[in-house]
Image 1 (spheres, rainbow, N blue to C red):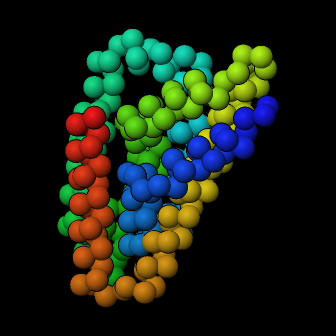
Image 2 (image 1 turned 90 degrees about the horizontal axis):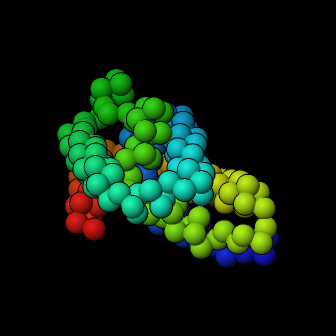
Image 3 (image 1 turned 45 degrees about the vertical axis):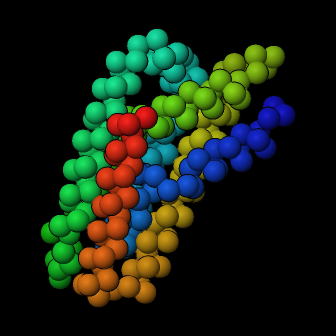
Amino acid sequence: MDYIPQLIIYVSIAAITPGPNNTIAFYTSYNFGIKNSIHLPIAAALGTSLIQMLCCLGLGSLLIQFPIIQNILKLFGFSYLIYLAYQISKFEMSNNQNIGKKIKFIEYFSFQFMNPKLYIFATTTSVIFTNYSYSFIMESIAITTIMGVLTLLAITTWIFAGNILLKIFNNEKQRTVINYFLSLCLILTALWIIIT
């Protein structure tokens, strides 16, 4: 399949650029460390891969045909991001790190299904990079695998970035400023989701 290098570049750019998935991963690693964040790349990769496969199999055309479904997804995604922004903004460091809002595997996995940006991206990926002169099943598997692997690598990169900052900025005041900034990023993303 001669389009794989272009597919890798396309997906890499989309996966590594800032967005809600990366912001949440960064926040979790920054506040709780790598050990408490290592489940996030796996959850994101599984959720993203499943959505990509469904879009390859026709879910994208269903979303285009029934825009109400996309509007419902936007509302859920908006609400969840606002909830997370609030949780992040009120986070306070404690000797007991269980007090803060740690994102669980199932929450992060489920969020993939409320992320309208992901559906748009997965739909366009399946349309642009499907060439019916090859085996449709093999193409769908290749696209889905590349999407999953690159999502895993991108989220992992953001987790390590958060952990590096954890070592540099580790007092309460610095942590509060960074968490407010991350909250603001999530609010802006939520507004972007609802407006577009």
